[in-house]
Length: 312
Image 1: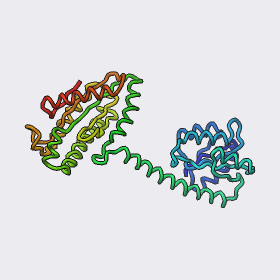
Image 2: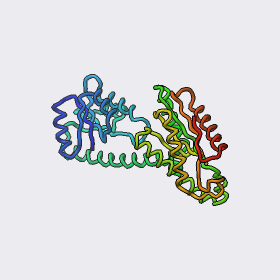
Image 3: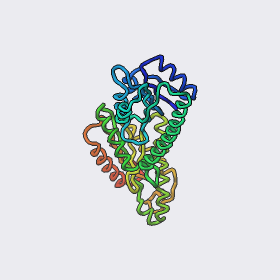
Image 4: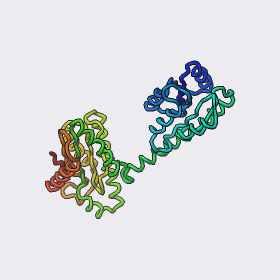
């Protein structure tokens, strides 16, 4: 386990650290409650061993502040054991009310200390599994079930944060709105199962193309989301205006190069896409206006013959 030992006595801390390290644990030492809170903000721990009597901020107040930092996620809870020479009923009640979980004497026999650490190790392992499961569930909640791309909800949440940042520091922000050309005709002709396969193939192409420009450092943090039905969006924060144009043309070519048969797609004969792209430099006002402009340009691309990008 990774343990944070909060103890103002260096001599006592040296003894405790030696004992805990002999059990195979990694120990960090905080000389005061303030240092402990700062350490907790910078790192994660499997267990906190907290002294009660410390100058300045005592163990109870330190524990209360640490609990306030953890948020509401049950899996983020970190066990806190108070290490004291005076485990009185009053101290026990105060410790639990402050957010502590257990008591142990500073002079606890070796076997008792080791048994406590084994129990905490089991809890740490369960917390790690729970955290992993929660992250997986959160990721699934943010993904479109058909394509695996970010869904509309996740896209909106990310855009809110990215747009606020862009407007606060006056940096560019670009958006591409993408629509699969004549997709209703595709579904009518080939069937809905084939339509699902088509959307997955296009989504994979979009994701791979955007990832390539991210890897080439052309953009930083661009991502693709399924906007709805056969519509997709590419969000391009940070990158200079003009970057979105190169990416849009690249995406149009990449999808057409898949050569997915589409007999009902006008003169093309394969699956194609249309794109409306805009860049705000610098970002200002409402991001909704950016979506409206991109949507208008998307329909302009369709009116102009599809398999193309119209850009502002």
